[in-house]
Image 1 (spheres, helix red, strand yellow):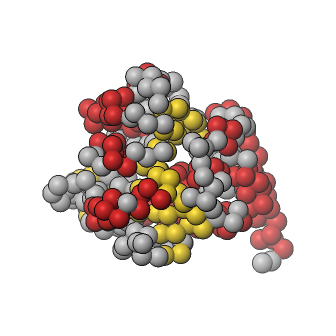
Image 2 (spheres, rainbow, N blue to C red):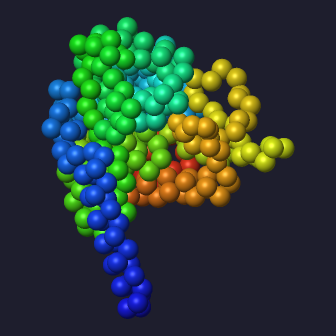
Image 3 (cartoon, one colour):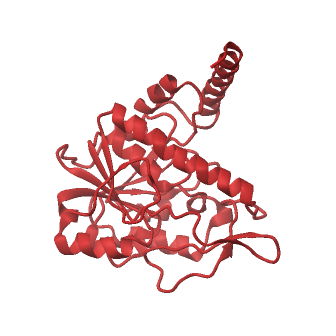
Length: 298
């Protein structure tokens, strides 16, 4: 790298670092809420298994239940898993939501209400619900889950850091910043590392984000999204940024750029996990993530 490039890189990283801390001061705080809250009776020798909502989970989840493998690991669920029949069987110890639709009026729907109703009515075991610290509309999670005494609510930080790598990992070790480069799964991985797990397994994390892309006759970017709980193949639908009013559509350029950043986020989490002595194992058949070691289901 030439001297001029080094100077430009140092200036850019300095600016990004200063911007990160200014944003944290303005929007969040500097406490490690995840580590301070600790884990739910965590056994360090156990594994953390994160259940994504990708279509591969339709095959993997019955295998996990039949083999009772889920009893040998601490389970973490995300997004709408609470609406599944398996939720009360798995009884996840941890639950993570981060999509703005869960706390912004612009994204609220009957399905979101059904999700919170499931947490209110079904959870009769100790569970930690992790939610974004950033909550501009002051959404009351405790009220939404009916003040269920079995659920404790813990905040996590989501401000992205893009400065000096040594400062980035210094922040991560203290729970600042986040692995939030696009998916709730990355938040779950980051939380698992902060909780002290040394083995994190991924199931149903297909990340086939380029499958089913098309542009319709109105020049809107559309995608056929697929989840493990879908009964029938979904028709392609326009893709919009989350919780914006009015809805703002993606362009092909913006979608591909965001997708690339998402996969870069997995590489950052891989490197941070390695620094912390943590193995992240992708057990999802056909997953597009190439950052982690892969092993078939046990």
